[in-house]
Length: 88
Image 1 (cartoon, rainbow, N blue to C red):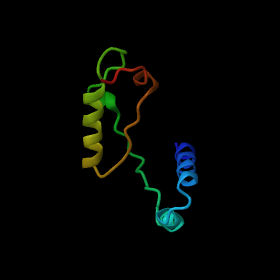
Image 2: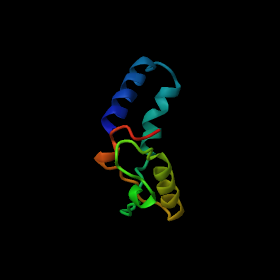
Image 3: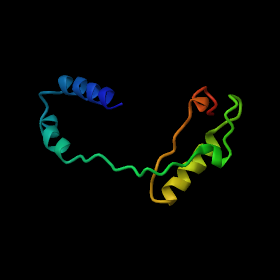
Image 4: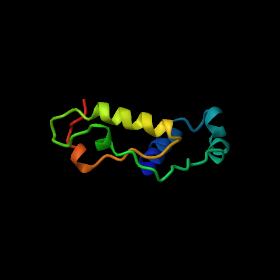
């Protein structure tokens, strides 16, 4: 993901390299700090997800994200079984 973002940024920079706004980019980038993500997982199966390839997992994902936010952060991992298009 980082490589794709940096590639897109490079393309954008090359297209707009002469504009004054883009000259501020190096300074802006020095102020960006990567977030620290807590090693606390919110498994979507605990929120009603069924990895059957048919059942919409979106409500369970939404509930897991809400619980994650309420707890102060963490991760909502998705298993390969949920990567088959069972999202609405």
